[in-house]
Image (cartoon, rainbow, N blue to C red):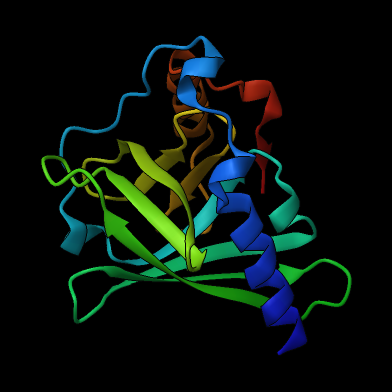
Length: 175
């Protein structure tokens, strides 16, 4: 229980609006998302392939996220990882909701009310086999897959496209 609470609090602080700089401060063009997301296809289990290092996932191995539709139409989030020191499972439960109904590609996620952060789907495999998530200030970045691994050529192509969007491939850590 203590590990779960700590993981949830870390996730909370990470999505706190005061912790992120506004996109206008980055000097970068607006972050482009995918044109359309079918949320029903997006739900389910995802495995983290790579990410920008962030303090709330420090010591996390084998990170994954599970998304499920809630009765109110929003999305239940369950993030899990294995602690690198003791091997115990850490998890954080959250809540996500769409903020751009035209595309369903821009969401907010909260692990502790009233704090929330951006979750923008900037790339998505044709068959929803992978997804790339970023934030408009380019501070957070994840590559997710339906499987625990990803082909090296696909991974390299994703990083190249992310670079064109203002993300730094040199900061990405692959699992």
